[in-house]
Image (cartoon, protein in one colour):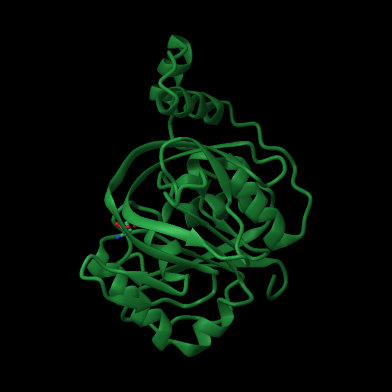
Length: 256
Ligand code: GLN
């Protein structure tokens, strides 16, 4: 962490890769830090702004192919940020995951360079992968992940990246090995939207823990369990507990 005890969270290009509101991942991280008494600043880094090179954690989201190509060039152009992304904590979703790799091949067959921070490459699949995903996360204590995917890209990992999770329902990376996302000691990438950290609080807390180095006090959030039950049941096509369904529908955002 930089400075005294304030965690700086940079949201990269939400104006470009913002199709699925993945910037909500930064809101979740900031709020889970604040609930633990740790100050957090969310710094929005739009395409017209000068990106800060001193954030503790950066998040980047998903979007369309053209937006993604723009984002890849923009990221490659900002050298200070690019250097920082090699050591900072990074949480990347879908297009964000793809542009952190070596290259992304478009439907035109052209390979556009990424940042090379993750040992992976992406090529177009035969059809889009769209729908709910359930995956079993390899990170200890994180458990089952849920989210939704909408991508054409198929991602192949090299030896320096491991999958974040094993797919139970859905497609994920789509390379045939059942892997979902990518993991290094500082970078987590996933195909899951949601925002995925709202749906999967244990993954959010894993990031909060790695960024702060602190042991975290548990949070009593009963609504969260109800919402999670509904997502898991829907994704796995299991019947819903009617009471949890009603409680999840009624749950209100919490402030403070
Ligand atoms: N454009 C990319 C693809 O279709 C990423 C999509 C996304 O971010 N949801 O594979």
